[in-house]
Structures are given as C-alpha cells and as structure tokens.
Image (cartoon, rainbow, N blue to C red; front, side):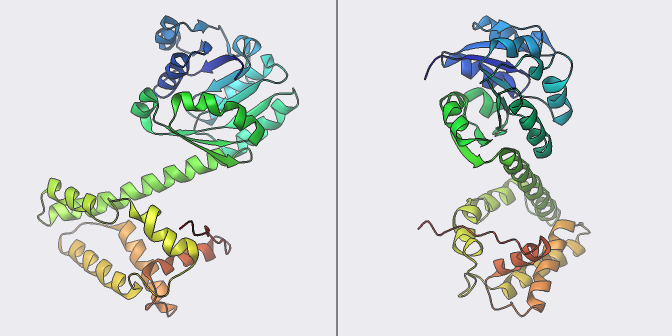
Length: 305
C-alpha cells in the first residue's frame, strides 16, 4: 500500500491505543486533541501536532476520529476550523466513535460534495483491546474505500467486518451495545437472586460460566440451528419446559424479595407464545413475537454447516 499521511483526532481512553498502534505499524501520523497532553505519547513516538482539525485535514490523506459522541463528532467535523473546512479531494475520513447513524449519513453527503469519502467504523473491545490491538471494527461505507483502509484497520484490530453502506457500522455497534447492556441486566438479576438465596457468588458465576450462556453457544450454536433458520420442530428444548424453569426462578425471587423485571418480561413472552399454541415447539420460537412487533422483520441466516 502506498504510504499515506494519516491524521488522528481524539486520543482519549480508546483513541490513544489505536493511534499508537497505527504509529507502531510504520505510518506517519499527525495528531490533534482538545487536550494536547493526551497526544504527548504519540508525539514521543514520532507523531506531529496539528493546531486544529482543519489544519490536520489539510495535511492528511486519511483522517481518523475517536470521540465521545455525536455532539463532539459534529463539532470536530463541521464546527469552526473543522475537518470539512480543510479536507482535500480524494481524502477519507473514518469515524471510530459510537455515534448516530443519521449524523454519519448526513456528514457523508457533506464530505462527498468536497470529493471526500467517509466511513463509520466504530470499535468494540474496550481500552485494553485498543492498547493491544484486539478490537472488533464494524465498518460501513463504500466497499472500495473499505478495501483501501483494511490494512490500516489491521494495525489496531484483530477482527474487521465490512457491514455495508454508510451508517451500517454504527447500527451494528449500537445493537452490539444494546445486546451487551441488556444481557448484563439479566445477569445482574440472576446473580443477586442466587446470592441472596444462599449460593456463594464465586460458585454461582462458575456455574453460569460453565452453562450454555457462559460457553458462548447461544450465538454460535443454538440460534444458528433454530431461530436463524426459522426451524423450531423438532425442538431442542420445548417452550413448555422453559416456562416451568422461569416460573420456578420467579417463585424463588418472590420468596427472597428480589425484583426481576427483565426475567419477568421473558416469562411474559414465553406465556404469550404458549397461548399461540407453540408450547410443543423449541423455546426459541417465542422470538417470533418480537419479529411481529418490529413489522414482520425476519432474522434469517443461511445455514453455514
């Protein structure tokens, strides 16, 4: 790949590690941050400083931003002395922030009017992942642009997925976070009840790690074999059996006065599905109720086995 001048704006908790890994891979990097001290480690490794996003974009072929959210992304791109003021024809701006799909799509049109390309490429993996180059990147935009950037992405990540048109990377990141945060809520309800009911926390966590959820089989095995195929008969485990298990868990919660709103919602979904006459089917059939509520959206993935 031809050597490009790379700019990096936002060397905070996540951005610093990513930027340093780009420098380590041999690229020339120009940096900017609202706090100049945040860039010192990059400068010590050979990066140069720009006084504003505009100045940085005037000098760079490829510009990365890693910022807290939509407000900061908007300020850095189209605010005073922003990236758009200095961007050159043929340059590429990549936003690594967790931001708004609507905003990135709007900015995409503005940058296109100046002959520049845009990709939204939010990351997942946390600060440690950013430091050691073990991040998942979800990149949306033109595929041709993605292929140009992929070698640079590999400098600070170990899992890179092209998600489709502009904005789809951000959608994937938001859905990933919604899944993670929701799962942690369910986990908290189960852990607090288990401990209050008399199990040591360490023992309970070990049992959950060793179970179906903790082994990672939900997304990798059971859903691909059932829900993603729309296949619920013959059942791997019947919905009526799941109803019994959740009923007993909620009974235990009432005995120990532990609220379990997320689990209660799951029970309501199961009973609604049973009322449809689905009790003899695989318990994942209840997920079809959400598809109906979403406007009859089908989540189906071809069987890869």
